Length: 153
Image 1 (cartoon, rainbow, N blue to C red):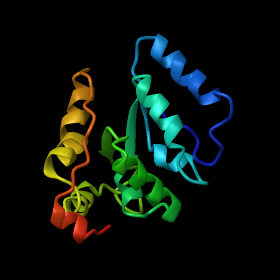
Image 2 (cartoon, rainbow, N blue to C red):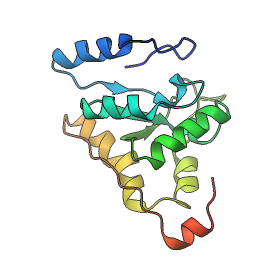
Image 3 (cartoon, rainbow, N blue to C red):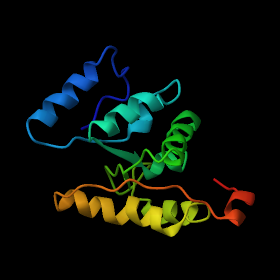
């Protein structure tokens, strides 16, 4: 599911009503680029409710690279560091410009801070689970001692 990033998400469960309608039809909503829907900072409680309802959270690789601005980048990292991301994917619309595939670039960047297993789940296993109509896995964010000391984004 994708919502218009130019509009506010809506108050009082407007979005949740759409998600619920998809859910009761027997589908699991995969919510695209969640980090972009919160221009004033991420609402982790709302995201946690979506996860508790069984919805899948996808973050754009380009958001983690800062392509969509500082707030979106911070939102994406807050989601990731909270363990509230199921999939890191691209928002590829064309072969040139700011919406090009950048998975290798984001993997190299994230591998400096996050462990291999979490990145494998986010970038390989969970996308495969979705394609095979299987349950996605939650991640545990574990940083090594040295990765914490030499924290980079």
